[in-house]
Image (cartoon, rainbow, N blue to C red):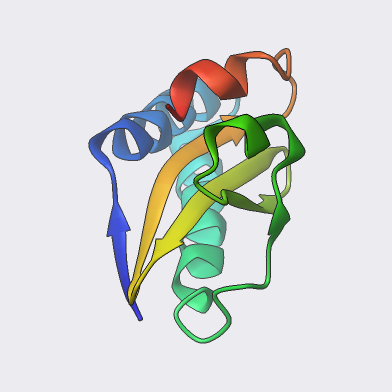
Length: 102
């Protein structure tokens, strides 16, 4: 399986890094991003490890999620490609997840 991280998901990762850098430190931010990226890379071997995202069922794209710390890695599988569509901060209102993954 090939993993493709969408531009939106890349922007979310950058936002997470910036937020944690300001709140704590750049080293802690790097560690958190590394942890998220490690879980993303594990999807190559176990693409269906994440559960179906109930909030996104209406889109009929079969989104799945992995939870890492305070973040949900949102992805979908199309043929032999895993698209990472979002890295969602679980501390936000759950309805925001729908607008980001259309």
